[in-house]
Each structure stands twice: as structure tokens, then as C-alpha cells.
Length: 96
Image (cartoon, one colour):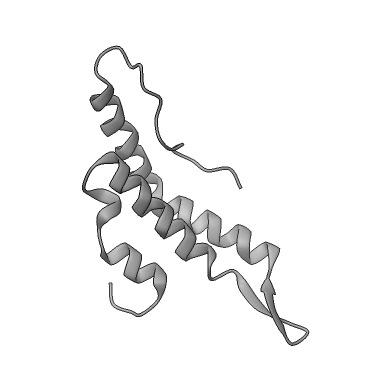
């Protein structure tokens, strides 16, 4: 992807789909935060979060990151071994 937005920069690092589970988790969080940063608009001359836009950005992040989250869960399962003693670091689908 080309562009200067924080979303594109976070995605272009490709850390959300490579590296250790901890690195992937951090990258997924960075991308979520980058999407949410674009949930503000000018209302009565002041920049503020627009609830509907925030909900849309979270949904967009969830849709984009669904595969990365699923892969992370599988990676964590493999790392925990057959007993499955460890819990996943992230949920596959974040609640809005």
C-alpha cells in the first residue's frame, strides 16, 4: 500500500502477520489504534470523536485484522503445546 496515513504505515510494517506472538499482538494493537485515530471530525468548530465514525473504524479494523487474529490464536495454541494450558493473548473478534 502507498500513503502517509498512520494506518498504512502500521500495515506496511507487516509485523501483524510475522514474528513472535507478542510482536504480532503489539502490531495488531498498533493497527487498531491507527484505525481509531481516524474517528474524529469537526463538530461546531471543534475536533471530536464521532460515535458512529468510531464504531465504523472499529468494524473496519476488526474486518481487516480477522485473519491476523485467527493466525495469532493458532500460533499461540501451537506454542502452548497439546495441553492447551495457555490462554490466547487476543480475542479473534473484538466487541464494539
